[in-house]
Length: 572
Image 1 (spheres, rainbow, N blue to C red):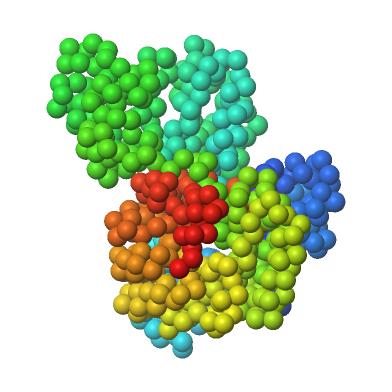
Image 2 (spheres, rainbow, N blue to C red):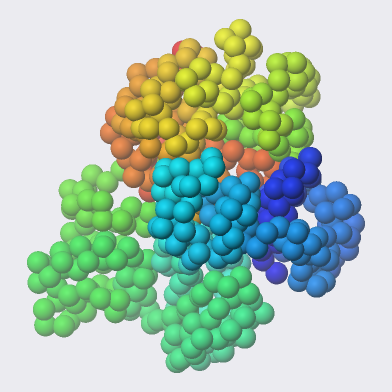
């Protein structure tokens, strides 16, 4: 069972309950869904080992939701979801998942137009029927059409944070077979692209038939689409396609380079080979007479072409080959470079774990420092803290500092940026905080001039240290808001405010292209997880990967600094 499938159903229940104006339950279901998403083991395995009590041990899962999870494990369905769907007008369930629509708008549209499919909704927009509904307009129509486009475009893609653990677990299973001498994950997963379509495995083996037999009979396999002598394709239980190719030693490196991609990078590399009188393919690098030159390792291939090695994250045809020819590629930030995580939420707002739980998890990860950053008061749906609760939380953190003196705990907040660019707490309260992340949580459809002015005003506030998820995108769900990021980056650089690279799998905001843009305007960065549970702190790897795809080095990221230097940097 895929935890992601169960989490999706819990999110759907939350949305439908919200549609019916049910109090507090939507928050509870969303909290449980986040915990399920970040579990380190399959929820059905947990149930098999510990039963209902094991399910109730999951953070944020009470007896009621635990019962529904067990129902899903046993039957594959949740009765309450069926009832909620049946009680909603036809079409609402589909419409509310269109980016920019949501449960309440979906209900209004379904009732007003009596449409029940996405195709019907798209047709209604194109015929300008939606703009005639009270409360809607031409802009609403355009936004819905854009949302349908996003939903359709992304339907075959999976978040990196969801597909990566599946690929790694399957790779570990394959490596246990004695015929597998070596195995690598290739494709867009190896490049750590934010969304991926399928999983590619390359195997070095002298017994390809044994590998094919083993791969196609693994318990993770749902359907076998093709089984050949050296290549097989399957659909996994998670409905993701996976391919295995078996190669010999001489071609393994060339094949790894080829199947890692990107396509544009490979085209440029093959063009370079041709200019040098060579031929490059997945079988190796050859001279014009067909004599083998390289292919055992990727490094050999790049070296023979006169290039320094190009890390997989850089292979997107963004001038990396020309720079590799000059030998001046950046020394990318290592995956173990960070000293702290400076964006996390606790049970004080919409997190699933206590402040102390988060501190212990940070210690286990070896961090020198962290910042506790629950939501500010205007974020009511996330149980944002009013001033009274904020100061109570500060007292709790002060007590925990005494107990955990081997890690520095900064008391902060993710403070919402109001539409006029002012912050959600007054200046005297912001001075009580050690670390302030300013984030946009509303009015995403503002014109770019207005949004840029709003954000620049926020980053110029003397109490702000970082700009959270700077473009507001939700992968496969919501486009970035329109903003002149070059101007924001310049303003942030001038003030010494870091731009966040948010490691949450659904955000990975900034994008790789925007990281490069911001770096060109001398911005500094901070990589955070935006964790809402201890398990989500592992997402830091995704943020570091995004930083690497954005060509960042250690010197570009402020939370690579040891504690004393970090504290000095954030003192404006």
